[in-house]
Length: 134
Length: 87
Image (cartoon, rainbow over all chains, first blue to last red; front, side):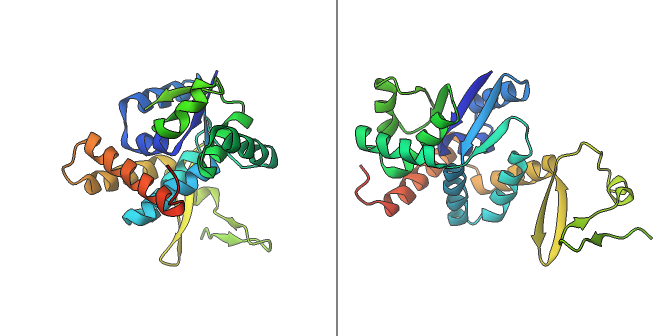
């Protein structure tokens, strides 16, 4: 089973029925994937919707998503915090991006789905994680 | 008459009969929230569908690509506000 780490761009696409992400969702429903969503991604996703005026709906969406057996919200624990500091320092990642990636790596993710080439290309180049670009 | 009960620890218990009346099965995944002072319980499926409808209205004739581009830009703007030195 593939352990899929999800950046905020993934969740934005998940809610819209984006084809590549929908395919991943179907695979998850079939037991072929587990989706790991860092708690900090939830923060970004909801904050984005509060700005758009759709916060209360987004709250419900996240709550509904959490009921799915193939979705796990990943807490930022101490191990992830330490790893994030190292990633941020060595790759020059902004803190929030480093925390998101570190949470996924600590959760044992095999791959990381993101739209953010600017910040995560270096992680792929250095062989830290397999990145699936959206 | 079947009534919702509140336990001393603050847990709200909805009797089986009421859930059955609402068409909820034993294995149904539900989401609960407080709205206008009332506790609302809905199936996760219902919440997802209602949310998708709301989003479609927001798109307002835009293509999916245009909408995603806007969302990505807004996300990037939000991150940049947090950290203006973010490259």
